[in-house]
Length: 89
Image (cartoon, one colour):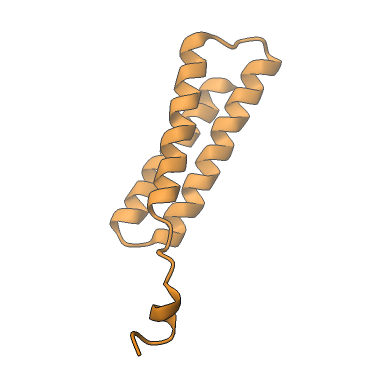
């Protein structure tokens, strides 16, 4: 189970990156959140099956960190109170 969920997560990250390139930030973020869920499922599957190893653990930590970074980078910028009111007065 760990291998195919890890690959599924990787494909979701690639799909999210493709959506980001096409300027579809909402779709990209949704795919990246699904990728994180796939990586968490991989970790849980490995733990319950007693298949956890250092390379798998490092791969999962790196994959989750990279995906979370992509989500944070593509976050919609928040407007300052001045910008919301229509500029400087």
